[in-house]
Amino acid sequence: MTRTRSSLRRVLAGGLAALATAAAALVVTASPAAAATVPGIDVSRYQGTINWTSVRNAGIQFAFIKATEGTSYKDPNFNSNYVNAYNAGVIRGAYHFARPNISAGSTQANYLASNGGAWSADSRTLPAALDIEANPYSGGYCYGLSTTGMRNWIQDFLNTYRSRTGRYAVIYTTTSWWNQCTGSWGGPWGNHPLWLARWSSTPGALPAGAPVWSFWQYTATGRVSGISGDVDRNYWNGDRSRLIALANNTR
Image 1 (cartoon, rainbow, N blue to C red):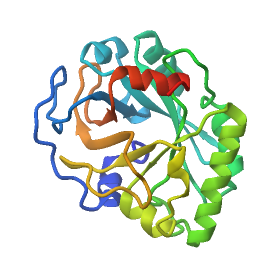
Image 2 (cartoon, one colour; image 1 turned 135 degrees about the horizontal axis):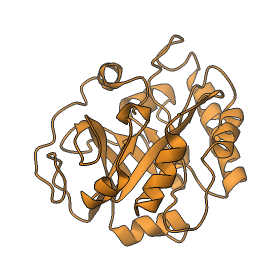
Image 3 (cartoon, helix red, strand yellow; image 1 turned 45 degrees about the vertical axis):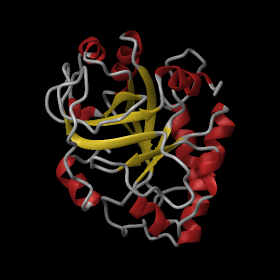
Image 4 (tube, one colour; image 1 turned 30 degrees about the vertical axis):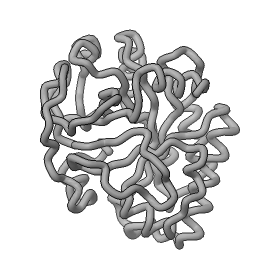
């Protein structure tokens, strides 16, 4: 995810950076061929000032926007990105970068919900996403938690976010990290949409127990009109009407 920048993320992704090969309509960069999918992006302050009208005119229909990290950081571009994306007609959702070794899951879920991760049924607001992946800081790949400890932390976050917003959070992760750090836990996938990170031309194997991906981040080096430099590119696994149904909690 776009947070401590692409050089670090390429290291953390380890082997997931195979290039997409098929050209997609309405976008600038190549992307994997897909049927009944909707194109999207995810952004943070690293994308700088974004022209959201140009982004929407380039065919981008949804965006996850970094809101928070841990319990003390709010992305300085979140407020402008979140409002401007909405006004441009982009279906948007907030995301939170998890720091499981610094505070409880409930604490971080409350921080997200109070700093941009709230939800409303307006056809353009997705449930927020929990970005849970390899630790880019000190403390170990799995944040020093046992598989049981990680499961408990994630469940605490998910339960609290649902209590605050009435929605099941999206979960962003990689298959390798999830299976190693949660012990191949399948518990959340009955209700929580999977946002899979795999930089390749195919989604590949899913985290243990996940029946399907809902969102797929397939490259970290996409290009889109209205954004200077690289941006993460994503697909929604379905048509626009199904994405709006997720936004409105009617699916």
